[in-house]
Amino acid sequence: MLRLQGVLTFTTIMPHKNHDASSTSLTSMSRTKARFITYHTQLRRPFSWFHPTRAEFRQDIQQLPAQQDNVRPSLAVLNSTWNSRASRKRRYPPKPIQVKDRSGGERIADDESSEPPSPQRVPSNGWMVTEQRLKHPSSELKVHLTWDISFWVAVVFILGSTAWIVNGFYLFLPLVDIGGDHSTAASWWGFAGGTLFEVGSYLMYVEALNTEHDQLFGPALWGLLSQKLGQRKDEYDEKESGNKTHKFRWIGFGSFRDLGFLACFIQMFAATIFWVSTITGLPHVIPNLTTSPPVAIADVFYWSPQVVGGTGFIISSILLMEEVQKSWWKPNLKSLGWHVGLWNLVGAIGFTLCGALGYGALSSSGVNYQSVLSTFWGSFAFEIGSVIQLWETLWREPPVTYSNEQA
Image 1 (cartoon, helix red, strand yellow):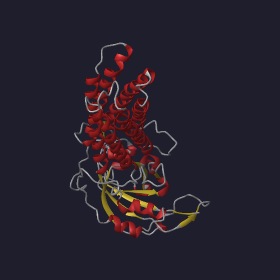
Image 2: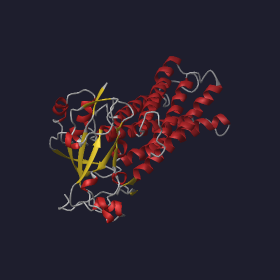
Image 3: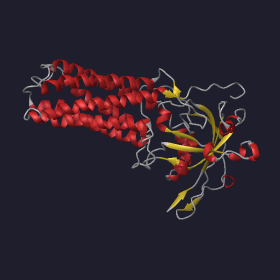
Image 4: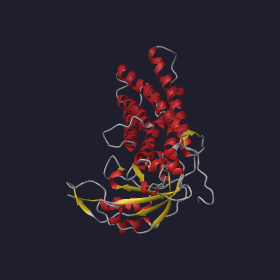
């Protein structure tokens, strides 16, 4: 089998900060253009069909001024990284970048050396100016409250999870002989939680819709990948060149090859279906729902939306975990986003079990007990995931300002 080997060269203007010697090597070029090189082997995606979710850029060490004893910093110190979740959550400010497509048409056999080809052997086509959210060696995360959509996604899910916890208390405590029957209050709290989950899921979808991941690296990066996948680059460029400016969108479709967008789209779809059960669960919508409802109506319009919606939550949570993993099988315990997905997965399993066990809740008190309990612990899991997501959103790199000369 043959595969393509290519190289991309990136240029960015680094912000000036006071750091150690290695960081000084980067910031000393704030008045010039620091060049980055990346190869397709440095692009990571958990599944081959999707766009990359992680990328690594190596600064051209030959371009840097030598330090004392004529020693330049190592490549490991100069690496800059990008990942799709951090970009979507706006954890790093956009920085001006010039990107150059230096991907060549060379084909090499799989059993040959995997070393990247020399840049001198690869033709170049010109520079494209764009902005990118990269994590540079000099990047520092600080608590930085920004009232943007990423912040409100976390806040709304915290409120929604809290409403579901209250709902769980109202339903579960009577089963252990604590308190009386509060099914009416529980129904309204469930409706509040379902509505907030619907709003939060929609905001997630809008957040993913406006990340502009299809334009982050310009056609150069995706063009390289398209060649690797067998797509003609000129066809891709023709397809993408018609949308070079972006306006904030509240509705529409992104790329389903963007793993983050696909997860958020499934989340919104699942939340909408799940929301149906919170509406039909309101008093008098389904007669005698808690005692002796019409079985077919209750199963179709109350329990089934919980099962289908909960299953969608499970799929979305798994995809969000996969987005931050380097490989589909390898957990990324260092990523806050991975832990958000993990706790959401636990909560989604709880909500799905609630609906699945609900089919037999009226015929067995034990099944009813486990159904209610699943909502209870599932709500707490969603709450933990939402708090971690808020923490992730608060820690950001402060915005970078550039002088006229740097710009």
